[in-house]
Image (cartoon, rainbow, N blue to C red; front, side):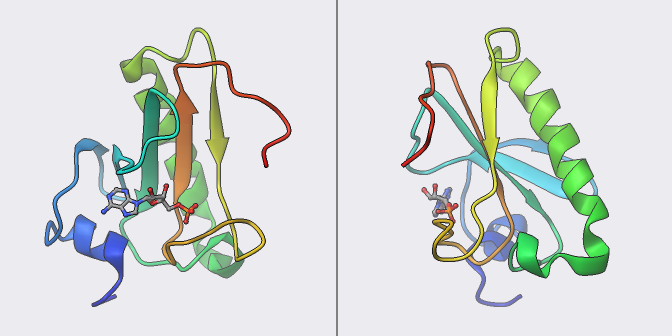
Length: 113
Ligand code: AMP
């Protein structure tokens, strides 16, 4: 999608600290980290949100797999981490391209705000 922020990161039109990439997904560091490790995992193909994923839902499994691999590479898998997909305005979604937050490296409280 031409003017989508994360599509532009996929096309390398906007710089990002990429930590992992495969044919379906890209993982990069969040620009405003909320934990020592805060990485976003996105599908390369534009999907607006989890609500819009429809027949492309298989990509969510690919995102989870990449998050697991990145968590191990970042050294947070042993102590634990959190994965979050914000969906829609009440869900706190601010970027209209499906993304999974991988947060770790500190004790994360529950429930979230
Ligand atoms: P959400 O609120 O769930 O839609 O999350 C969007 C996330 O994208 C936020 O955590 C932002 O800090 C992050 N973000 C926005 N712009 C960029 C960027 N250019 N590079 C990396 N992360 C970004």
